[in-house]
Length: 497
Image 1 (cartoon, one colour):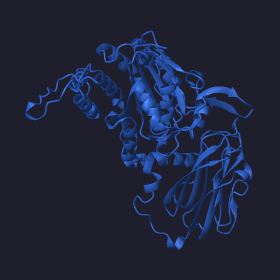
Image 2 (cartoon, one colour):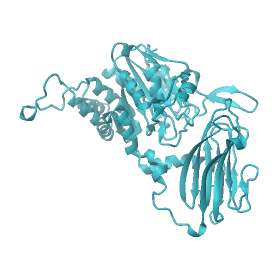
Image 3 (cartoon, rainbow, N blue to C red):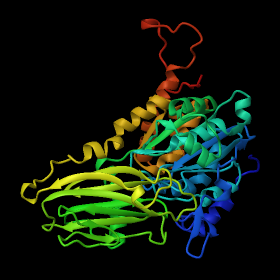
Image 4 (cartoon, rainbow, N blue to C red):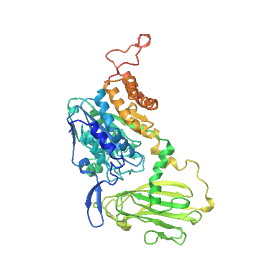
């Protein structure tokens, strides 16, 4: 696909007449009602990768794979707002001639209903429609990983690129703040893409195949660990409190979330042997199921919550159980869930799956955790104690190490402000193609009246890439050493080889 041209005036007029929030879908494409009680939402038909390929006949393909989970959903809005500028700068400065862009939206195949959305390669104002048709699901699996490897799989194996046939690479930008799953699941490939693979595939192999077609970069908006932790915690807290449940000031709390319309049930067996669940919501010892959802499959963002107020939980052993009472989804596939357990101020997180073979009721029962509560032995948890295991995959060091192994450390471009995404993309392409060095590119940012703060941020992000380009320039013979080594001018052009 491709062809045509992007009319910046038309794009700017469209943005002036609507807010960015109005431009996007947060419920997905409405496929209509399956029954009197259920309305189906899903991936827009034009963005559904199932059984499809994406073709680019233009000179250079560019892919922007945007994380649309809770932590990074606003990046798509930034991309939409700045797309006219991006196209204009590409054309004005010749960073990438004859480009066509494909947008992809990345979620989590273990929890989201729209884990991968893929737009056609376009070069005209249809790009706006692709972004506006994205379902910004704001989900995510809560594991520190999203399904980037599935996006890599699709573009590595199910695209037809004229540039690749000519032996030239395109550009691929992942924008996110998490790692990827170590295996491309054959089950996910079948469900999402309609393709058969004989076995799971090592994600490193898929990223290697992707790099055969594209120069691959990971744009990593930095955040403090505390900000990441708050974002991880926010989803469960928001769901519990929005549903009227009690999240704070508790001795014991078990909060269950999942991401489909099936009717999962949370059970807690108390020290006296009573079972708190949908048919017996309050126990004699003060426990209460204060949120019970999806009896009729009313939401894809459900939560259930059982808690004891502070000072009321009895001493003894507790068991936390999850069951699938009924399927409301058309397909009786396994349901992945997340459970957050707070005991005496210490929070632990658990992942699980129910109904692996379509079971319901007691046949689907999963014992998630057994613990003992003693109100006389309660001490405040050590600072950070609950974060070591539950949040380990969100550590910057862990995320960077995984991406560095897959695409190279120099191709991880860190930024402080997501509004710098476009500038970093433009700079990466200019430096890689050798049309500009970093000094020339920052100079053009200055002429566009970009602030000194923005220029410094972009320069810091591009410096590792620029250094790599400099080292690999002009290696046509023996490289002189010592006093015979040439002094490089900071304005020297650097071409990727």
